[in-house]
Image 1 (tube, one colour):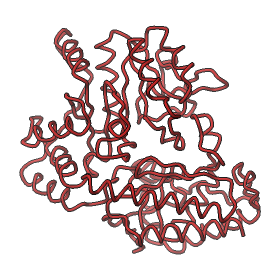
Image 2 (image 1 turned 45 degrees about the vertical axis):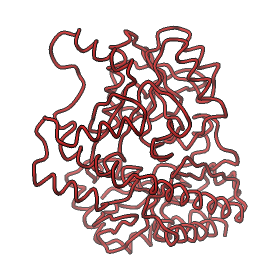
Image 3 (image 1 turned 90 degrees about the horizontal axis):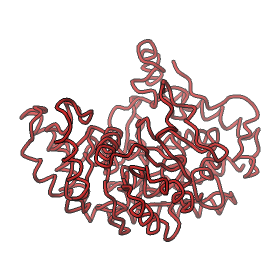
Length: 468
């Protein structure tokens, strides 16, 4: 059985806890109590974890499933709407929502109905389905880009976009922001360490030096962005319009207006990865704030929980990409997989876009997330903790710093794995799930006043226990 590293050692004296003036001995005792409570309450999960450890690396089908704060992996029996029920019968309100994979709620009837009906008619043929035309039209209408392709995940979509743009531009270099996350795309795992680009130490099995073809600068730093672009060899800037995976980092006022001008002035392309920031509205962050990317990536949420992704191109980029393909020798392009754009995925996307991710649903999600963010701020202030809350649409996050971070380095400095895991486990034991990576929460169309009250009550209780 794999045991997670919510430490039993004494004292628990993490950096964020020190900054908040929290008592290390109290935190260590709280951690022991929360672990004991979880262990006693989950005998069936414990047994499944024991059996799984014999045949799955780290005891789970995907090692990320072991990144939660629990002493052993929690096993799920079902997930519906904004609730998850585990195999021991405990139902929790879910503000993680599969780290946006179920951003519009679990098992929405429109999606389950469409997928069930399509499954009875067949799931994959490597041919276009009857839903393809409608989905393409809706993607163009919502997101403002005329040409699209499908993928199985945002990782694949980002990887494929890089291939298309390198082929279309004849340029090799990619530019990303320090602390970024774009799935498992090799090229993006480059960080700034003491101001110098360095391949991320945590990347396993990498054999090519990524800094040769990937540039990295701090988010919100226009001077650094221009210095790299001025070299004239950057194919594209790949970015989330709001950084979300190192702790949320919002763009400074006017940043994207100026950054877009720099990208175009130096002949590069702008790719926006909106896998998380689609929380901003029906057309994502770019549509909500008037950005004009050359390419757009949409991942996890677009199929209502069914694995799929899409990426869109401007008319100019689409023409250059198609020309590159036509002029290339015959053979595999390195783009696409056999199950890409299967009939189940297209059915799920049509149901999600047509019946689930509606304007009305977004209005509810954004209003609910605002209430969550305001409630978190009020609770943090009442407990006199030096933390802040940031928000983008239906997504918000509390961070262990008084002021919202301005770049990836500041966001990274605010992270505190030990304190995060203690808070996450304490919330889980009080009936609330939040994302295991940093402190992110999402509101879905099914999240109501009762669920918000349960979250804020649990959060208040946990902060009270931290404070003593």
